[in-house]
Length: 122
Image 1 (cartoon, helix red, strand yellow):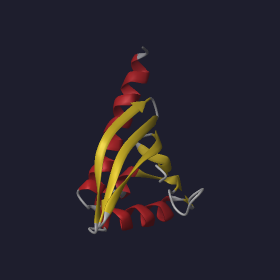
Image 2: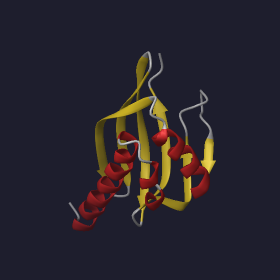
Image 3: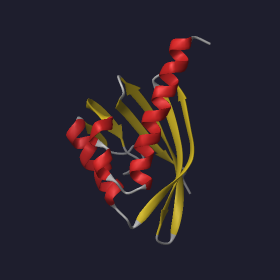
């Protein structure tokens, strides 16, 4: 495998781990240094397609709100990275239950530029 691809994959995995840590630690202050100006999110809600957030400020507002909410929490199941692309599998625990999901992410120049979230339907 190409050494540049391997190095990029390792960098992407490290960024996604830091991103995930912010949610697991309920630390919204860790997110600004991870999000690009042109970041775009496709959220898991509302069903079926989720809301779209465009730009750093909109993405940070959403993610920091989730990270700071102590009424629920994320359990990491897996982080996988291939070049600039990455996948985070997770379970979100809340009062009365949990839901499993996945984020498909893209990292460019050490910053998150794209996140698409999906959850398992019931």
